[in-house]
Image 1: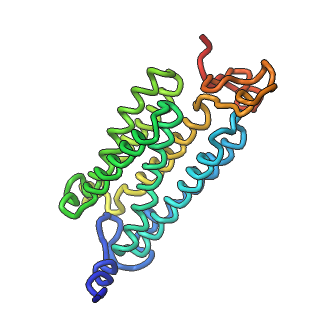
Image 2: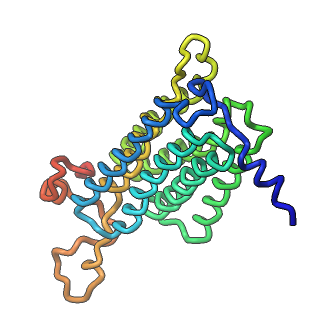
Image 3: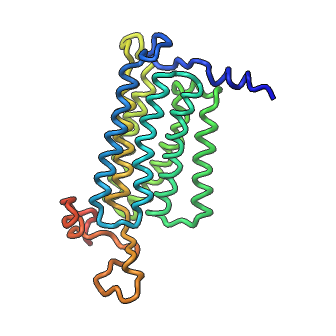
Length: 263
């Protein structure tokens, strides 16, 4: 089998951002350096998780924090190497984060069965991957692939809000920042004549904030599922499965404000 055409395709240079004026490694300094925001977001989310009263989702949240860092590394590779294979190094971690986060939201806040979560995540993956195709590259300057995520955030946010207003507000805060982030990404090329360095780096800064806020929503607002509650002889002080955190638990953990409104 001849892999020549495939390797040639993967090595093809990609020039889709205003800041890049050559094929040099450092042709996009702001777009490359701004990816440090993802590492900062990953570190901040990791530290916040360490102060979480409930540890039932600890492993999944740690994985999300690590994925945020990988997103930044993948994006740095793309904005320096700028080839087709580097573009996939950029896109794949974002897609993995989106799918895994979708699974976690449907698990933590909606308690959907596994088959229904799998179907929803498959739909999100398929629609995103479909819109990543070359024929959709002119749509929103390659940003069409993020429309399914925006739709998911709007729909899921409404459901979360109906279950808990504080969690809904936190989730929609992330969605609002994502709209700003997506706008910056979309306007990079249209504003190129007026702003030669472009505005794509704002996409990185705001998007890192989005990922932090999404993970923060899970850390601070996920209903408690205490192992002790299901353990025989654990006593009446155990927290029932699915119950919200109390403000005192949040304060004891050093967070300093109630995570759920008290009824």
